[in-house]
Image (cartoon, rainbow, N blue to C red; front, side, top):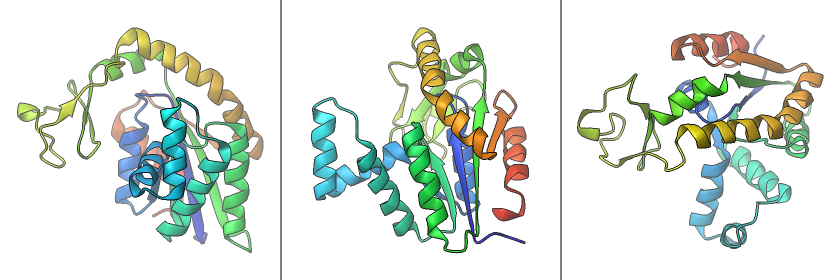
Length: 223
């Protein structure tokens, strides 16, 4: 029996392959909530909420849980999808608690399945991946120079020649970011583990192998 709603939450440090798997799930019909992208869209829309977010950014502050929660509600309502993918959210236990309650409330009879997937990977493996990582400034596609050839630095996805590398994508900075991420994220992992919905994926595996792991976790619910 296929549940009416299925939600998958991707959790993992920079360079773990989360973005690649998110693209795979989008192709399968999942509505993709990427926290950073949604915040930027709201700013671009010039809505009252967008103006508030821009002001917070300009002041160098962090967006509150209330704003993130509103952004999440708006996305789900707008998507109209029964297959939801959350990427980069939640980042804190308070956000995880909100999201879980919100998703359950979506369906009055509780006909929903939620899975949280943690992309587990060693710091040194991620550091190597990130140092070789490039991103298309136009469509956001991510490429690795060791596993994909980019002819004349032209994006195979959209044709743009704006292939860039983040200034902080160096080994020392990446290792620090991952260690900080693990400390901040551990309470969220504990939250989902207590609910019995946490799945740990070996993110050092190949892209295809990780995709197969995700397909197995989703089963008949998402496909």
